[in-house]
Amino acid sequence: MIKQIVLKNFRLFDNLKLETNNSLVILSGLNATGKTSILEAIYLASTTKSHRINDLEHVILNDKDFSSLEITALKKIKMVISKNGKSLFINNQEIKKNSDFIGNINVILSSPYDINLIKGSKGDKRRFLDLEISLLDKSYLKASTAYKKILRERNDLLKTTNIDLVLLDVLTKQLISFLEIIYKKRIDFIDKINQILVNISKDLDVENIKIEYKPTYEGNIYSSFKAKEKADLLAKVTNIGTHRDDFIVYINNLDASIYASEGQIKTICVALKLAVCEYMKNIYNIKPILLLDDVYATLDKKRIQSLTKYVLNMNQTFITTTSILEIPDEILKKSLVIRIDNKKGDSSDGK
Image 1 (cartoon, rainbow, N blue to C red):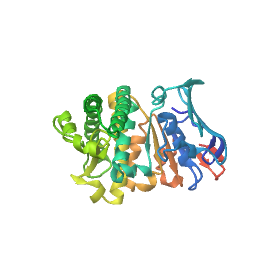
Image 2: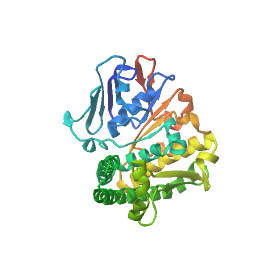
Image 3: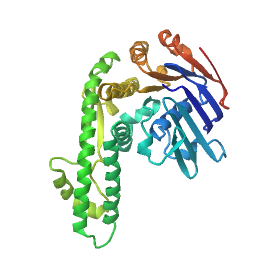
Image 4: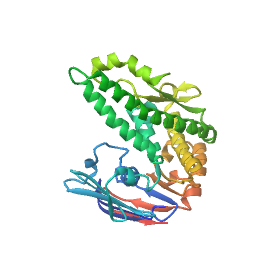
């Protein structure tokens, strides 16, 4: 459970300190007052990544030299961001490797950006898989890091003249060795998520949701690479591999990106994130912190009631809303309500 959040020069906040030692925390306020930024800071403390931007320099307030976030849970997690990069700390000890930092706070974020899981690019979907699996499985993170390193070496070689085909074959085999680990773990993750989605689909009263992985290779992977080798030599880039794979979300066996309504897509996105929460609990015995960014405004009354059941079963949930009238009384009466009042990040809190 997150007990305290301290932000300095972060987005709209020059100095913000929130006491959040409650299983249900509601961040209420008008749009553009910084509610989502608070969830972004929590997400950064868990993953070292933002769900909104790639360049973290943009979280630094105005012309300040740095931004910092400090999240106190079982450990004190701190990140300092400057134009030169980021520094990571756990209990005031600097952490040099991202892999030693991520996952010390386990969070699942459901936000409007999740539409990219349905309508986004292949890269958006791969990032979802890589992040969710890496947070729990260090061997996946290790294999993914090694794969990217060898992929860069292979692509660099493809760009040279008078290519050493023997070396190309060596790099191909090395790449495949890590590809097979990544592929297997992605398939296992998706299979388990699909099993969990059966019940969640019923609870949220949405048609059957299913994820189907779309690899760029089939059968013997080495043969697939050899078949594409001439194309790789011409394009000077590696055309197949887990860095090019995709997945499609189906609703009643129809591609959701084409056939799902806007309301269905929003519900599917919530269902996917709830499935990841259940996956963490069922497989790793971890109850993650759930971050719901403006989710209640997107659901109808019946689905709100279904979502409430999951929220009440979480270790801790943060909810952003423009109006507490959107929040069910069952949640509201148990919540710590923090009002984010203005664009300077002033806040007041109370039960």
